[in-house]
Image 1 (tube, helix red, strand yellow):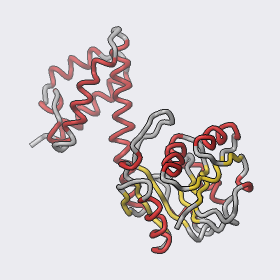
Image 2 (spheres, rainbow, N blue to C red; image 1 turned 90 degrees about the vertical axis):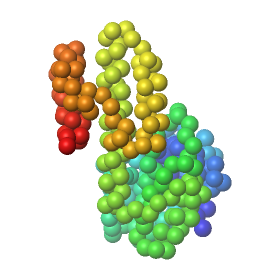
Image 3 (cartoon, rainbow, N blue to C red; image 1 turned 120 degrees about the vertical axis):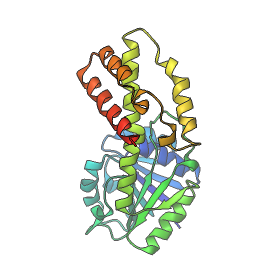
Image 4 (cartoon, helix red, strand yellow; image 1 turned 30 degrees about the horizontal axis):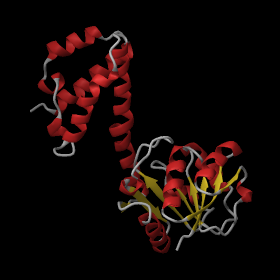
Length: 256
């Protein structure tokens, strides 16, 4: 059973994951960041030792969790050749084969959620998608993950990448649309708060019916007069392009 963990990283995902592990009663022994100040901030929250060199981590620690930017994972993996630990990364988009030739005991632990350091989350409800190099390691990762969340799902790298793409549409792109809406309102001195009841109802509705059934608005109705009037109200060329592209996508989705 996994009883000791080192966290490689100190960003948003690493912070929430380290706190969830600590709250589950598992010993977070080390937090690594190349900037000691950053690792110290997170380490202080989970009673861990802050380090700025991977060589300072115990080679026989049970689990190493790499929770850093995707494009830095491969380089960090190369520094772990001498470890006897299970090694996992938390990325939705990086294949498990990043460990090939380096870690014999490896896997993935991908939490499907948007993370910000200063936002509290109900971690036990977050879906954790797991993968491993063999069934024995998968069993260990699964047992560990179930201590963190009640929603643990096996998914290979291909399926995890698909879920990551879907998550970008459902979260990152949607939030960017919120930002655009905020900019449009700000120019008129209107608070973004006026949209919060609309956003709340939209979110509630898609928990009861499918997003396709929940769609409303001029593009859903094919109301070109309203859409053209909207475009005249938008000054930004990039915003016009986004409005036109999304409207066409919606309209095309409902053509009989």
